[in-house]
Length: 327
Ligand SMILES: Cc1cc2nc3c(=O)[nH]c(=O)nc-3n(C[C@H](O)[C@H](O)[C@H](O)COP(=O)(O)O)c2cc1C
Image (cartoon, rainbow, N blue to C red):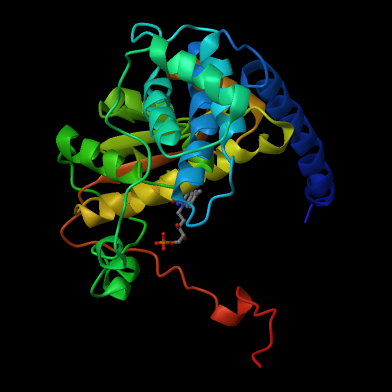
């Protein structure tokens, strides 16, 4: 091995650390610029705050045993938040409207509250905005488990990352159905900060994939490309600085399973890139600046006969540790 190659190899860890440092700086600058820690005038940020707030009321209503007077602080916060905009349908976002319904449910089923209860009451009298969604649902265990899979192994273990697709386009209705299913993904305070970009034209798919480093050998035949992103505006506390990756990753997984359930195949495509490529991608594809790319995803009908990677799984004891010894 030449000296240059040896030197390059020896310096690789250092190079990674330096690039990571640059990446942290980039992520930090995006957080400062886009996250919800400031800018209450931004209607989208306010809407995320609304769900974060009214979800506290939903949780309160769902508890078997409720503390006397609990939840009123959240009710007060919600009214305070909406007090800034006024409560008519033209100014309110989706979650703000749902939140008003939840607030009504909460008031009907709660006692106490003192001064806050009076402020909430005044607010509710001023608004006629109504939503049919939100609140709590009464369920039996049987109802909850009605969708249980007869053979979970058959479903989960038959999913493979597919890199060999039929050229047929993916019907939009089917894609919409998959995205709707994936939207049932849990998210922190139900903020649902996901956004999916859909490309199905050869030229635009090729353009987006030029910067992705894991599609060699099959990218040129991918009939449908998704770019899964998460909206930084939804996250406002310092502890939530990485929450968009978590929520976005969970959504992506649900989407992969939803596609599988509908007879489509997918392959996640990493977006483990540095600031330069991220900025370059944003020049090639019209992404909202506040949306962080979680990953790309190749989607299509699988070829009639295809090979997939075996992708062996580690033994269970390598990833599961029982901390409590059975008594
Ligand atoms: C976030 C993420 C990024 C991935 N990126 C790529 C990629 O760039 N190219 C690729 O061919 N596969 C990619 N994969 C697919 C993995 O290689 C694959 O999921 C893994 O080997 C397990 O195989 P399976 O999905 O068939 O079970 C990615 C998977 C994930 C979850």
